[in-house]
Length: 473
Image 1: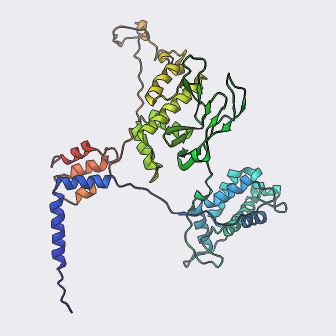
Image 2: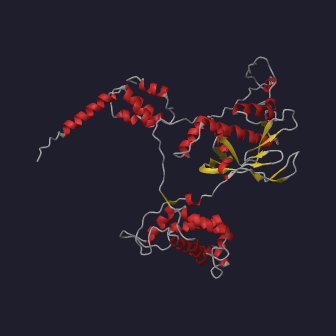
Image 3: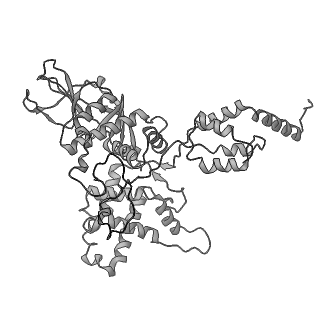
């Protein structure tokens, strides 16, 4: 048997702490630590359960045996998603049916399920809620206030039976606890999306109206990323229609045609005001809700394209999909053109193949109206309309009755809307600095960093400012 040499724990701890203390004094180590810590991605993913794996035959049998014969598909889906999207309420309800502690009473119809029933009835309305009952169950007296309890208990029993059929209960048939319910993932029931032209009939000055033909071969169809609302859909096919006579191309956000009226016959692009989606990158499309959100953020929050891109990535982005500043700027420009053109009842027609900077210049020449703001057309008031003066005239306080002319001289009011400048967040690096008291940081500086870490921007200047803080306040 060999004699093992074991180092004392106190010696190992002192050695480890000595190495950390000496290395932490190095500026290079601090920079590397800050850079590595700041670049760690954080994704908060809540636990989700898979969608109920039940055969349609069984589901159909459950619906026919639980709900009325006149129930519609929309009502059935509303009931289904009410159950799958309220797991916490179901957990609370079923826990009262299976008490585990002494002093707890078993409650068959809890207040939790009754509250869910009330919300469902409000969502469906009286007419659709009536279809939940069979003919022998339904009666007009159910909707009287005196019979509200009876009606709610009847709907609650139907929901509970449907939950058990869909295996959405945290307890099995024998009353054994299977686990807490979580939100049900809708990944398996997401629709298959296709981006295609919104025009189903084409017609120009040189072509008679006829149906559009899809021209792309299956192997040539582009698969792109589509952001619908704020949900990311990948591998979405983009289809293109074409007129075989004049070679006009029809896409989801624009139409491309050759201007035969001009001698040079240039290719033109018409931006569609009624487009449901738009292309903002090589393989990146967004819907109008996304582009409108970008426009509203820039106007309401005074946010830059880079700030909104980082906000969206931190809130809705995934590990594989994120948006860039240039893509947000594309969405901002195209949405602005679409909204203004629709308000002006103009179809913006520009040369094809322009850069986004050239599109902005050309669109302003079409929609800018020489700088006139149409929202202020024919508007005039004493606050925004004043007599032109080469030099400012001071307004001297005077008695209005003694000098009535002073009432005509007023200061022009300038209303400044204060917004929120959204920028990248600095992580809580102060926690690292607190561990080492010999880094020339006072408690005041640490508090300042803690109070303002949400508004600091992580770049070399900020790191330089933090590093060069004075050792005393």
